[in-house]
Image 1 (cartoon, one colour):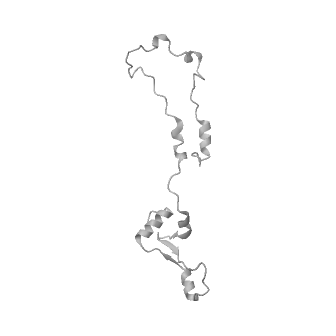
Image 2 (cartoon, one colour):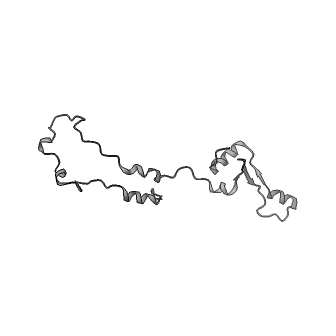
Image 3 (cartoon, rainbow, N blue to C red):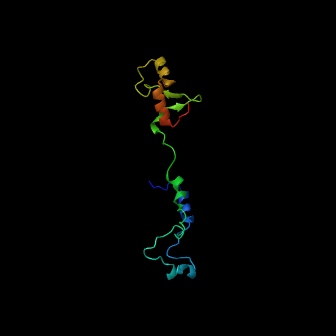
Length: 136
């Protein structure tokens, strides 16, 4: 998978300023650079004031929010099996009614058709993490 998953990233790449390479885009007087008088003397220490100004920060920081998706993915199996109620509790269907129900009494089969809640604090915490729902 590409690091640039967002379509807008390509337009950001196109609009970013190109770095000046080997004097391209500079006037002839600026391209010549300092003369021989400004060349550093061998053995002399360089002071911080004489050092050139730092180049501006690269434009890569503009792409940082586009490279990574935020958050965790929800578990696709959990979101098919569990639902969060309006009160915040989690409901799940009862098992045992998908097939081989011909021998069941009607009352028992109907009872298996109703949904129920989740018992157990740790199990509920695990299901909440899989669903991506953390507030109770």
